[in-house]
Length: 246
Image 1 (cartoon, helix red, strand yellow):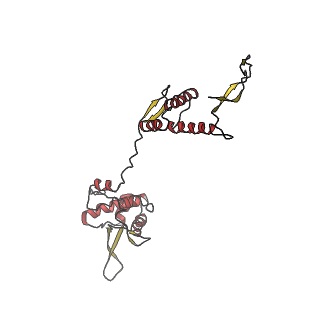
Image 2 (cartoon, rainbow, N blue to C red):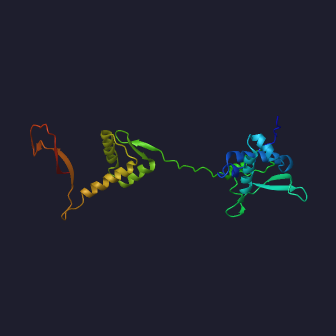
Image 3 (cartoon, rainbow, N blue to C red):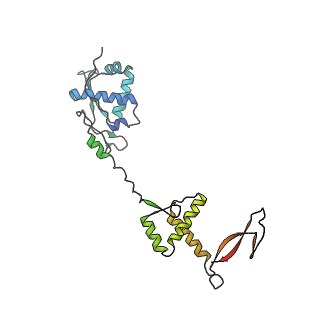
């Protein structure tokens, strides 16, 4: 039965999130770090890893070649003197993998969890420092219910603005909007803006026409009201618009 090492295997963030590496290649890297913890380098052969992971030697060779290609490992081969016969092969962990596009070490700031191979516990505090603090959502001011039907929502600040802009009839405007919302079932995202919008429309309707100011408003009256005489209401309840003085 094969002996399993009890040392910690370390797979830093650079390896975990490198999409160029296959999952088993990343796992092999972790196994190599465990062996490096014992002597500072990995001396195990491809036969050892092949038996450990249940694959052939060629597959192990490809995994190791990828780790070397992308700068995560360094390989040292010892030949028998005067021959091409390999006596030993040593694999060592690169603390700062090489970015093949720039051919320079990857910035340490990017390496949010590049733990030393001698560490056996993740440095949680350091990892948290790399995380940007969550954005604090600005608390919305509390809104209170106003109007006859208690359905007009205004914050204290909005209420003060309403009193300042409409000092004589702010309560009447609130009640009018409250009644409208209750009868139609409508609600508004901003009730102060709605009251202001209604006031602008009223102002436009009361604007001077033909050199004088007409204090009139548009209202709808049933057809069955004609002058001062009231007749029977027909089935067709159509309406016409007339100008009625305030």
